[in-house]
Image 1: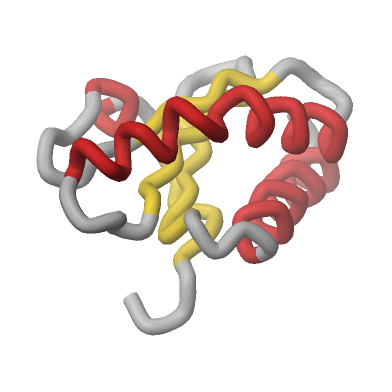
Image 2 (image 1 turned 180 degrees about the horizontal axis):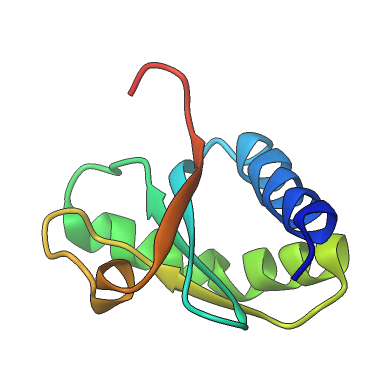
Length: 99
């Protein structure tokens, strides 16, 4: 991927995340594919956060795909549990102000 395409990709992900108050952080990870891990703002407890993820994941994936015109793999990152995704090559592309 060229630096210009990568910049467009990371900017698009950051703009999308900034427009969604439920998202605290977003990472780009993996090699080759567009893999995005998101950390959600806490919603009471982790079970409520999981429910929010399940309710919105499909919509969020579609929104991202429309912005960047390529298939997106979207993963929820639960900071209390961790994720194998973040042990791979990763880069923070968005963090809500105040964190």
